[in-house]
Length: 239
Image (cartoon, rainbow, N blue to C red; front, side, top):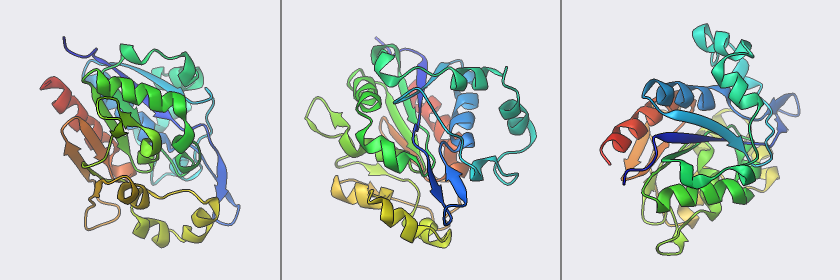
């Protein structure tokens, strides 16, 4: 039996400051909005959930370089389907993972803080995978994989697989590497190495780039959120 044509987009509940305390990081808006749009257009029912049911929007993700045009209109419209679902998210503990054929971890730097121990979101990802569905992430989303297991082998889900995510080079280029290191949380490249995954990236840190490894699909950065979701749809349709 095919997995349900229903997707859950995971959202970080964490918030923190970056850029010497000047700006707030939370969920990177387009990293949740773009997959929502792609999956809805492909006929998926799409829900959102965070570990606590709460979220904080990332400051940088609301700037014109990242949020403009129809995306900005959708974000500003609290009655849009996306905002209604985001603003009324359930806690992950209240979500039935068996109802979903796709798990997509959106991110934002804040995901580095709560995703590694978000046991309920991780449990949903494990269940989707065990039921033959697709597990995906974008940017800092692979932080969710810190404790996600393949229940068939009891090994890390990403062990022996290829993934991508936000580059350490980009953290340095943004001038926030030292601040991130003070959080004492693994960056994506470090997590991939520890769990036995092969980390891949594009030549450019801001290129639209994603990696498909069977039912595991990951995107490198905010620019990759939509293409990653399109790859999810393509692979799902071939299941």
